[in-house]
Length: 162
Image (cartoon, rainbow, N blue to C red; front, side, top):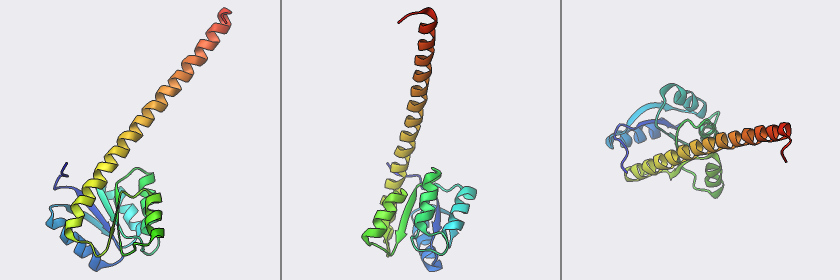
C-alpha cells in the first residue's frame, strides 16, 4: 500500500546539513516536512504542536537524545518514529528496538531507502494502534464479565442458590 504523498514529517537531527539534505530528499518524493528540531526535547514539543504523521530522529543529539525522545513519543502513542543515525552498533540497534522505533536507517541514507522505510513504519504503526484498540476493547469486556459474575454471586447468595 502506498502512503499519501502529503504525509507530514518532522525531522530531528543536531546537524543542520543533515536536516537540509533529508528535507530535500523527502520533498523530492512528495512528502511534506512540517518542522525541524536540533534536539530531542524540541522534537517532542514540535510533535505535540505540529501533529506530524511520522518523525525522523537522530540518536545522538544534545539534551534529550533521539532514543529518549522515541521512547517518550511511542509511550504517548503519538507518532511513528524512524531512526536515522550514523551508528550501526548492536547496542544502538537494541536500544532502538527497546524504545519502540519502527524503522532504523544508517547514514548516509539514499533517497531510495526512504519511501520503503516510511511505508513499513506507517503500516506497523497502524497495526500497533489497531491492536491497542483491540486490547482496550478486551479489557472492557473482561471488566464487564467480572461485574456480571460478582452480581450473579450476590444474587445467588440472596436467593440461597448454590
